Length: 210
Image (spheres, rainbow, N blue to C red):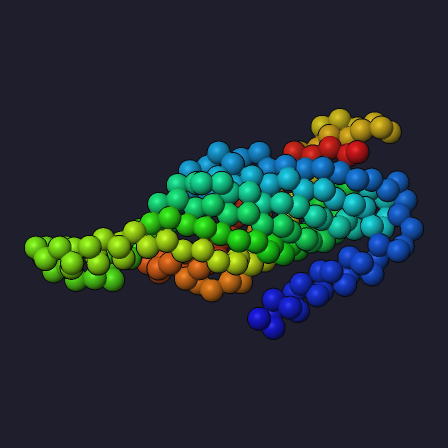
């Protein structure tokens, strides 16, 4: 819990601390992820809005990142179905107009249906038994659902390609790679059969300045 508070405090404090600095060529941008919504067992949709906090948008600068994380009724490798919604806050630092690093914190809620690993917690006799009460108890455990609060930290490095650029509007494509780690309990969606809560992630972001 202390690590969560420290991470969240650093992101918020830094972002709010620099928001009062004068930003040259200040821009709002809106972004979405192009690939993850269509990947099996992932199905994550994201929309985020960024605000230039300091510096020139086409040079070294910093951005506040606010977003949403949507995962509605997706078939999953640990549970039969997962529904997950979260909000995010983060900071993105551009070293020039292209290269950047990003740190982000997500807070949300998850609902799951039918954890697929619970069966492994029981001996085969539970399923071979002819006693209805035993069969029912085993069936209920197999079908166990989970829900709870999720907290996620993400660290990324990326590169921004400008597809079009004008004084009024810029459109860009941005691949990112990094690490995502669940800060919540490891059994938030039930037994994971040894699967980690830390993942290597890749994003392909399409964005537009407003």
